[in-house]
Image 1 (cartoon, rainbow, N blue to C red):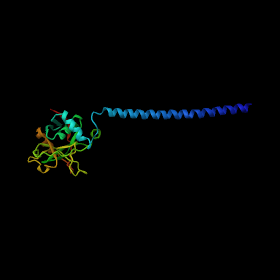
Image 2: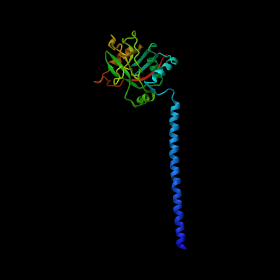
Image 3: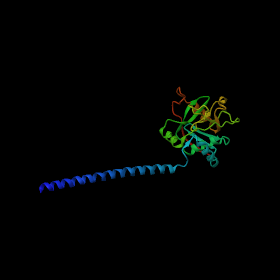
Image 4: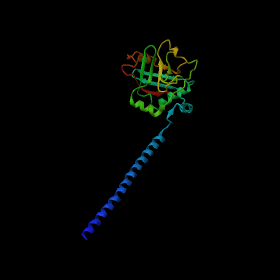
Amino acid sequence: MRLLIILFLSLCCLSCDQFIIPAQETTKTSQIATVTEQKAKKEEAIKSKREFPLLTSDNAMDFFKDFEKEHKENKVRIMTDFGNIDILLYNTTKYHRANFIFLTKQGYFDDTQFYRIVENFIIQGGSTDDSKVIKKRKKIGKYLLPKDIKPNLRHVRGTISMPSKDIDNPHKMASPYQFFIVQKKDGAHHLNGDYTVFGKVIKGMHVVDEISKQPTDNSEWPIHNVYIRKVEILD
């Protein structure tokens, strides 16, 4: 009789263990499903908060075509530790103007740098190795702008123009995050036809001249960082 009772209790314990295991597996599966669902909702929430699409070379021109119709601002101020540089953006190069206004409104240029300085030639800005700026760029998108050459807009002193991407870019499509200002007194006319002039300095060329005097290394990067503290829209 005692043997039968022991055998009965053993069978009960075995049955309980077999019952508990599936319950634990079900709980684990349910937790995974919940985490996956929460992640999907979070990604959807981030996506829904975007005020503009992730820009690519396929959709950028259509985006700026619509953007420039509603955003007519054409004057900006570049703030540096050397002083302010006021820029007039040309309406005739509307996509490049719209691009610069758009990036300004996104706060992209804030804390970037004049990262290339060639005295008696140009100062080039809009880039940096700061991780925060790199994240901004990643959020905005990866795209290029086609050249928009106007015969009457030439690389005279004080013009603002857009450089091209160096790699795999035979048509010299413009790099939208960067710009350069011609500092040379006689201009840089050998650049005409290759790069899009889209604005000019209307105040603060003495600041451009002072920045151009800063010492650089062999790669034309200033030894002491020249920060663009902020770019703001004036009008």
